[in-house]
Amino acid sequence: HELISVTTKLIAPTIEKYGTPEQIERYGRPFMRAEMFCCQLFSEPGAGSDLANLSCKAVRDGDNWVLNGQKVWSSNAHIAPWGFAICRTDVDVPKHAGMTAFLVPLQHPGVDVRGIQQMNGGASFNEVFFSDAVIPDEYRVGAVGEGWKVALTVLGFERNSSGGSGRRGGDFHDLLGLAVAMGRTADPIVRQGLASVYAKQRVRDWARFRAAAAVRLGGSAGPEGSIGKLLWTNAMQEISAVASKILGPALAADTGEWGTFGWNDHVLGAPGYRIAGGSDEIQRNIIGERVLGLPGEPRLDRDVAFKDAPR
Image (cartoon, rainbow, N blue to C red; front, side, top):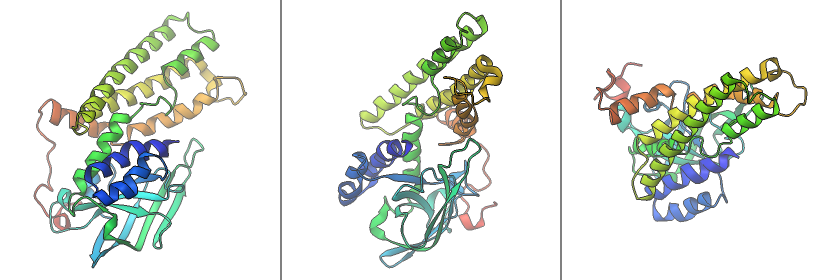
């Protein structure tokens, strides 16, 4: 299940990097062993791709924090006992400087999880509402105001692992199996599509392995993750196009025949991965600025307190 990889590959290594020794022992180890599970609580109605624009508040009250606000598109929050939330803790500094990361128990008073039905029939997304939810300071991960750095670490791990299992939709081997089953492997157009998908999958694997090697050597997830993520979403779109060409109307007919209607879920779900983990546009900005050295996007909120920034 996706929640396993989120917990073990994203949250656990982030806690290992930023957590206290007590947090690593109490949460990091069980998360890494998949003995407990944790989802991400990042996106908000007004802060999707621009995560630093989030407004969910965490106000300090002695040894506790009081959370108020909303998160959305929170995958698997309805079955996860824990959430990893980035909240606004200071509105008097620029938006990137005023955020803090927290572990939040999702069966806690003041936390309301509501499911979202998806167009492909799934229901893994949720809205999460905080209404005066009080959590202790021991749930804070990293220093106060360090939330942006923590969030980038989580997202970096996510981009590096995107498409790694090959189970988020069909991969090349599934597509080849479909072409064989439908007797289309002699079609030159289909063969060209299969070759293109295979080439992109290999390049994506190499980019992912390179990024993973850098992390194992003690570094952080870098812009290589954005390159791999873009290659993955592009491949997902191309796989959808080739599968649709092979199947034609059978794509939408639930006849029970192997390899037909099952692709419908892939075709409907693939566009969503262009948004998950940072949109394709965000990945291109990262590559342009951090790899190619291009000028950054113009920002009207640079060096402006969050409360005074135009939104």
